[in-house]
Amino acid sequence: MGPTSVDLVKPALPKDNTHATLVLLQNGLNIEKSFLATHPDTVVLSGVSLIGSAEPLPGHIVQNEPDRLLVGAFPHPSISSKVASAKAQEFVTLYSAGGKTDCKHSPDVLHDRWRKLVYNACLNPICAITGVDSGKIRLADGGLDGLVRPAMEEIVAAAKAVANVDLEEDVVEKVINTDPLESWAKPSMQQDLEKVCPIDQSSP
Image 1 (cartoon, rainbow, N blue to C red):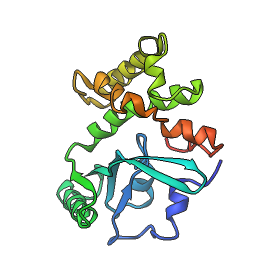
Image 2 (cartoon, helix red, strand yellow; image 1 turned 60 degrees about the vertical axis):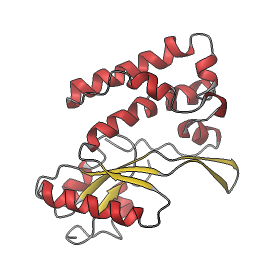
Image 3 (cartoon, rainbow, N blue to C red; image 1 turned 90 degrees about the vertical axis):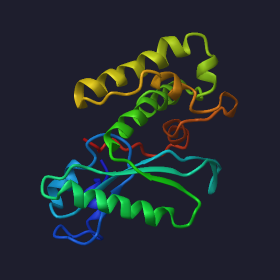
Image 4 (cartoon, rainbow, N blue to C red; image 1 turned 180 degrees about the vertical axis):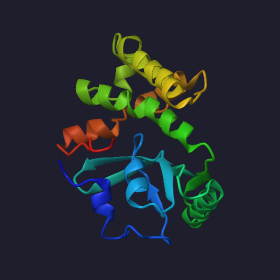
């Protein structure tokens, strides 16, 4: 087990910090909880990144999708939502200043995290385990109806049951078609597995 996110941030972010804002772009749920406990005076923002990239050769990175980022504040027990929201909007302004990114403030960033999970919690492991990319899994006999759709429908149901998050009725079909079929895109977990990279399982 490697160092936790808190361990990695600790040298740059003292526990008594009151001026710096922490932005978490990591995927998953409850990633903020450890920081809310260790940094009670730090605003913690949630960034949901929708960028696409690949590494076809070692050290050769190809950005194959535009840089889209949704930013909102995690609820904080000791910092008002008004203050946290203002920090989120300030970050959006800074991140958008170069004119090359599509960065928006999201007042309902928990919804955005669950929506991304419809892709990440389903296509990521399915493609990694089967060794089939997100395009070919849609063409494989039984790939969609036997694996992908049931997994995505389970995430939609979990979002409602666990977090009272209502995802749109057509979210499964929209997410299935996120990657153009002919791009034969490999989700990040599949890429990591093929490159024998560590897969982080430290999040609660």
